[in-house]
Structures are given as structure tokens and as C-alpha cells.
Image (cartoon, rainbow, N blue to C red):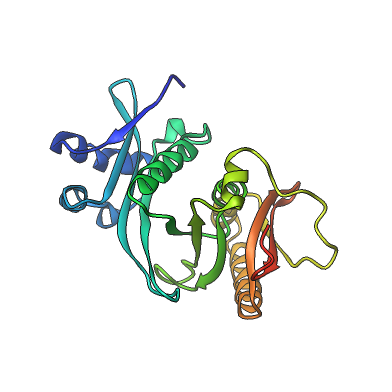
Length: 244
């Protein structure tokens, strides 16, 4: 992969190209779920974030962020909600998602925004590794059936100027070992493949992890780290106020 250039998408022809890119990023995405050009256009022309990643003249990644209020906090704070991010199939697993997130962070900080939030499927190990392990997000909110039956999501908070985030971005992971009583939640190595080949096992993973997350979050724990394992991956949780 050659050097990638990331910049704001403002021209209509650039924005229209996002429809093709979404189909490459998510091969099975139904047409009804493709974000239309007019929504991208309206968001970007009204002060929201829309960045595109280019390999030469080819659009290979994008991220959309919408500003709003984190009203679950007291007092509420201005946040950037990272609504969607996609990377062309041939460019996945090469660090482009991480580059887009760094560009998003820079954009937000330039505008005085210190919190970025988004949701993701907690059973996708690659996303967990990026979000928790490399970016340093924290998470204490779980949404069952967020996009439909069993489309569960974790809601993450990325505090851009925190020591934790700065350490993760500098490549400084959490020091091991964790205390022996640290709660953990394992996930499979490839949940999407499991859905295809063993739907019953995938359903068991979903129900089991849903119970674990909701129970631990209700008890005051937050996700603070994720590590790859031989079997798949594992979340580590700490009590609120004990984040590292």
C-alpha cells in the first residue's frame, strides 16, 4: 500500500463515489443501508466531519462524524459521534482505519472537541483490537438489538486528550499482568465466520457475552483493554474510577 492522503470530502463527485466504496467495505450490505450522497453532502456542508482516504486518485476509505451532545454526562459535553467508517476490501487490515481515526482526532481537537463516541459489535475481534487496544476507548454501555435482532453494540467513549489515549497512541499498552480478580469477557476469533458455519454457536456467544457485559456494566465496571488470544480475544474490565 502506497502513501495514503486523507482530506475533507467537499466536492459532489467525491461524495457520490462513497456509494461504491461502501459496497466494497461491506460486501453484503443491502442497498437500503447504504448512506445516500445527499446525507453526506448535507452533513459535510454544515460543519460536520467527512474525511476521505486516497491512494493516488482512488478513494479507499472514509469516516463520517456528526456533532451533538453527550447528554448522559453531567453536565452534557459537546461530542463528535463517529457515525460510520469504511475501508475498501483490498485495504482492510493494513492500518488504514487507524489512520482515519487519527485524522478524525486531529479534526476534533482543532475545533475544541475532546470526546468522540461510536458503536461497534463487541464480538468482532478486529474492531475490538483497534478501538480498545490501539485507540484507548473506554466503554460502559451496552445496547442489545441496537440495529435489529441480535445486532448488539457497545457504545464507546474516546477521550482524546486523556493520558490513557495518549499512551495508547504512543504504542504503550496496559502493563501486564492484570490483577487475578480482573473480570474478563472472551470472544471468538472470527464471529462472522461462525455465523456462517455454526449459527447455533454464534447465537450462544451472543447471548453469553450480552449477559456478561450488561451484568458487569450494571455493577459499575467498564471495558478498559482488549487483547488477542489463541482462541480469539478477551476484554478486560475495571471498576469506574480505576481506569489505566
